[in-house]
Length: 336
Image (cartoon, rainbow, N blue to C red; front, side, top):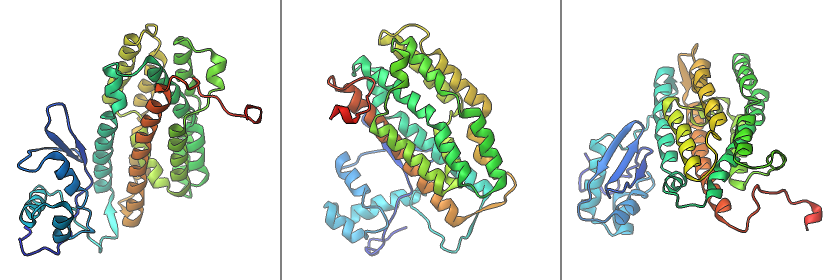
């Protein structure tokens, strides 16, 4: 417990996600744990402002001064987090992390970030039909680019991998993934887009950023890339449900029945192939993971999660604008 006199203590929260559902309660997600926070006194904005200083760089006294929350209340909030084991605990002497422990934590964290990606306003806006139908078309268009990029980032991972067993694993993965973009392409054609336009389409910048970030991770961190597959590959029935939601949205926006069938088939194939198990397979003969590699992998995985946020933001921004070309065109010299 933190005492009222311990004003020089620098609390740091474990990585978490905050979500405010329609009920008005504050949902805090840490790994596979969910906490509903009660508001007592301070409003939500004040609480979230205080939360951002629980970063291990600010003392209790500094947090109180910056936020205007009394030292007593700041200590109380920090202790409430500590009682739930939500403050970060660092062990500088730890050089190896048991493989089983590492895998369980990665699975919990990717579950948390997948859930957060699902909370993005792109999905809620589409379900409420707050966006014009072109935004839904844009989601499918950028999904096509996303799937099409597989050969690029997987081959990058293979060429920079120094472990022969992992190279073989990734090579098999590439063989299974390199030609799946036709499924999203077929969806777009069924939605009424000429095939030639699909073939010549140019990704929006959020999609390019996602692809380039993943290629950079593949280039510098094979373990991190393998961990990332748990985030960008199908995650069992949850993602199958998401695929069926796409079908419902397509119908709601007036697109032909069955136009999403090829994408649903792609998700089903990924689930059968168990591509979210690549990390487990890669580490199956290892008892531990060097701590420095685990730290780097987690940071890269977290960066990719934020690339998803920009990817979704980019779809809304570009396809909501009635003046933008759909699909996006490349700009050549003669366009200047």
